[in-house]
Image 1 (cartoon, rainbow, N blue to C red):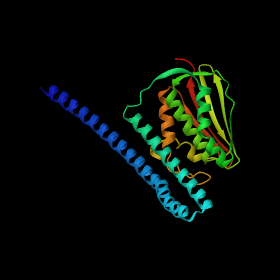
Image 2 (image 1 turned 30 degrees about the vertical axis):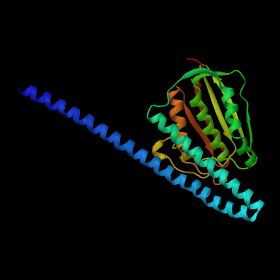
Image 3 (image 1 turned 90 degrees about the vertical axis):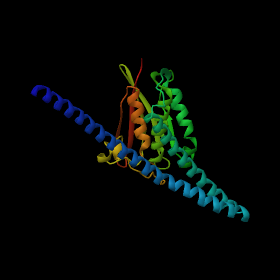
Image 4 (image 1 turned 30 degrees about the horizontal axis):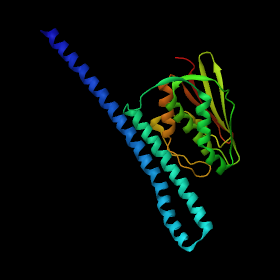
Length: 257
């Protein structure tokens, strides 16, 4: 009889511990989501305020036929729109991962193709900041991964490199093959990151908004996405950086299934 009571108490305590653990995880998850949405809400305010404010000014200058001011305001509106779109895309992709709506579809594909596509997307940014971007990847190198996810990773890492590289700077994309994996590195000669901040870059509870060299805004959500995608593709992601020297963001991917 006593033994049965002890068993019941042990079972009840075990269930209580499971519930306590689940509650802690739920609180942590909710706190993380609250932080993400507060950062995003704050960072979306700026580009939309710029779009609305400069649209009003643009309408006034159109009436006055002031071509120089029209050109300047149109550029600001374009830049602000791109910032807002980039942030919304990251948010959408992150939410798809969290809800399981982004399906994992690994395949063999040529990595050089999507690297070139990602570089092409940054053509306007390269012209605006006079940044030289190049790739040393050899054509024909294949990896086994989800093509869409790796495209998003490249887009985010290259975009970050542009953000923190001074005008007339340089960005190089390189690769190395070691046994069964390929490592891609995005190297810039930009402003760099303090050593104590490097380890926090991929931690969701340490997310923060950082200004680029031309006051470009960011949330850190892009790096969290990169970590999620690379982990799902059985790879690793890391960063090395020195203040005023530049940064090297690297990730590895398997060569074969």
